[in-house]
Length: 111
Image (cartoon, rainbow, N blue to C red; front, side):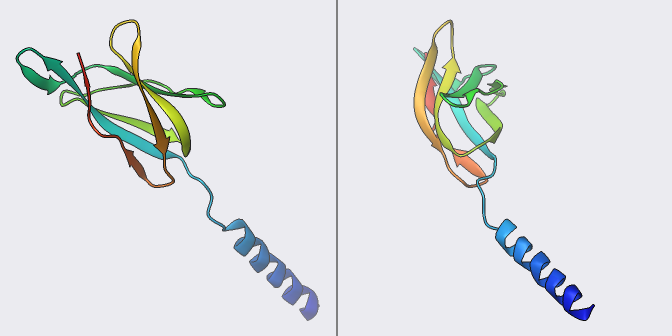
């Protein structure tokens, strides 16, 4: 009986070790959209931002706040197209979401 309990304990420990290997987790993509005008550069507010990938489709939209910042949550690591919807045609950028808590995108200027 003692051997069975010891064997079971070793099996549980082995499963925990094997199952505990690092995996790619969902991340947050964040950045800022700026609007360039004849009078200067200002935060672009209420702009729709999405991510798309061939094998993953399009993310739910995020909207820039009053400072031009956006946050897209629960994004798996990989290559994406960042889509900034200003008018009917998006402004796009190729990005890579890293296996870190946050992927920061440099500010993007639109008209």
